[in-house]
Length: 136
Length: 130
Image (tube, rainbow over all chains, first blue to last red; front, side, top):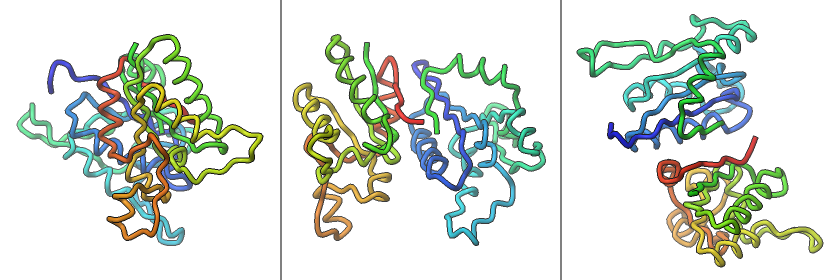
């Protein structure tokens, strides 16, 4: 990563289906990975549903794009911050989310979890540090 | 200051398109630089020349085209979002075997890399939408 890298945060606030924002937001993250910036994602409000395990869209005829989140680690998108309060408000816990991991190249390629459950205060601090926030 | 403008909503449906236009115009009048205007999600619908609003209403597409001409603005419509919503230029129409194109004057179709790049180049990226 170059010294000039900017800090990008992709904020996901909407459920995965129902509107196209989550799908098209994820497309930006994947393309953006080629630019070698300091990238993270935040999941708040209904956005936490994007990471839910066992998504099945057969009956709604929508494209199930949830497997794509598993590829994020390979794109070096390794910081996925999930708002604890949003999870709790929806009756969800960490166990309800997909097991997303990445291989840490600075630590002998050990597999580590990408998802980090954070408080709203921690999220606010993280947002404060960003150069660019893209919000879907 | 160098601004990058992101328009995430379509014209008329949502005020975001108007607000983005007004912001861009005001920033230019104050002597700021607009690195690029990028149209994403339903925002790509700001780039069709077939838009025909009632005569007593503003024509948002034409407003963008005129502003682009006056200030040599780079108006970029996301190709993936545009394909989903039927916004095509001559090349895209040919590539996908369509019988017409509808891109408005002053707009061009390109990839999402242009969105990331403008975020890197600008001092501030301003996003308009919900």
